[in-house]
Amino acid sequence: MLDLITTIVINPVIGFRQLKQQHLPTAATILVILAQLANTLQDSSLFGGSALILSVFVASIVAVILILSISFVLHSSAKLFRGSSCFTQTYQAVAFSAIPLIFTGPLVLLNLLFPLSQPFALLFATVNLLLMIWVVVLLVIAIRQTQEVSTMKAILITTLPLGILLSVLFLLIVLVGLVGRGLL
Image (tube, one colour):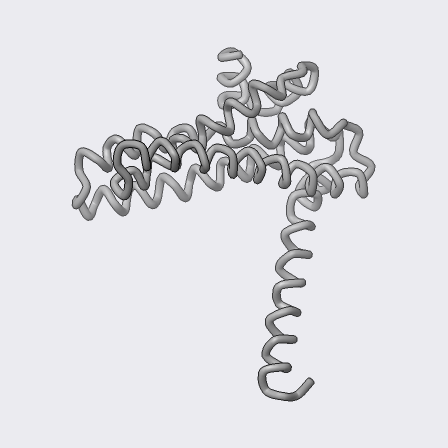
């Protein structure tokens, strides 16, 4: 398992090819929970004791549901582009593409040690942005390898649902504005 994670980090194309050949939905779920744990610890100063435990528990459940939902949307989108994988493989690919989020854990510890350091806050924000970009790149590679589609189709598969969502939200905002002004 650690070999697979290392391969995905170092050489994602080979790593996601190897992942496609394996059935690891439980490992994928554990990976999502670990990534969410690192993310939840960013806000640990807000909680103490049992509230922190409850926060981590709830955030982990929400993260798994969110990854399952994203996987469903991406899997459905992939089917429009004649993707070849089953839902479980798509779920694994989406979950394993979140590996970089685990690296926020050490950043959180540094932030706890130096909480008011302005240069560190800028570094923290920059590294978080770079990790999110890395996640998106890994997601496109994961979809391409898992669904056996071209890079362009993988980009469309990952961006099309977002484009549709933003378009619907824009139309809803316009509609609410028109109704609010009495024009509709």
